[in-house]
Image 1 (cartoon, one colour):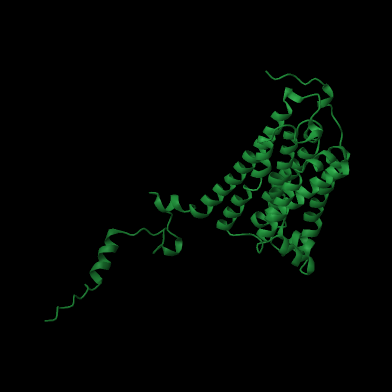
Image 2: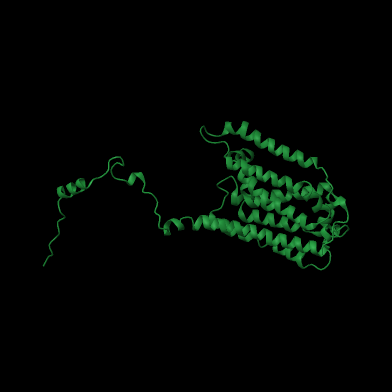
Amino acid sequence: MLAAVTDPNVWKFHPHPEVWLLVAFLVGAYAYAIKVIGPRLVRPGQPVVRAGQVWCFVAGIALLWVASDWPIHDVGENNLYSVHMLQHMILSYFAPPLLLLATPEWFLRLLIGDGKLYAVFRWLTKPVVAAVIFNVGVMVIHIPGLVNAAVTNGPLHYSLHLMVVLTALLMWMPVCGPLPEVRLGAGAKILYLFAQSFVPTVPAAWLTFAEGTVYKSYDHLPRVFGWTVADDQQLAGVLMKVGGSVFLWTLCTVLFFNRFMKNWAQENGYVRPRMPDAEIVGHDEEQLTYEQVTSEFERSEPPVTPRPTS
């Protein structure tokens, strides 16, 4: 049976004003962009931002806030590496694609222009380049010495989180980025996302089957929920492998059905789509009668059947 937390300070509230300021800045910048800048750049009659993009922004910022603030940040940094892993998953798998979906195309083009910065951006967002950068970052943030140092070094800790978010934005850009010339086709997206699920297997397996303590900074009392260090490490490995893979494979499944099975129900069902108006002969308000049909048949000449040649 799991023991209770032996130190109540584990769940003690800790304010993070730097996180609040960052969230406030991002919300203010987004509102200013769509209210002031956007109307000057978008063609007349075109929407500056869609309602769905606003909701994606709200969800992405909410996830970013939850992952960076109390209690996830504090418990993940000081007590449970599994919570720290959950924090990384939010910052790399869940929040970045929502923030990209929330970004209007005109806004990103305004930021990167069409010169050298745009050329660098196009190179960094090539699928192979973006995938390599992201997965190298995944391996780096699991180096024991770096993790142990980040626990006691605030600037290093936040720098690693910034790296996680930036590399994740690059990785997601070919999938749901604002620029159409960067996005992959549906089939390529499936292969791309499926490939992303393989590299995290290495650190996940290492954490799950490691003998002894991998990260010394998490080997201390009190033990939250009574979990041992090995329990915590194994749960972190399961979250990294199973949680990340299930999320990516779910996206692959959705993309597959949207692309290749989109018209299957319509083509194989009994209900046929309504005939387009352009193909309807006559006028709906004037009903065709039996007398009109027979009259047309009487006026038309029967088809001439050619005689067989001997």
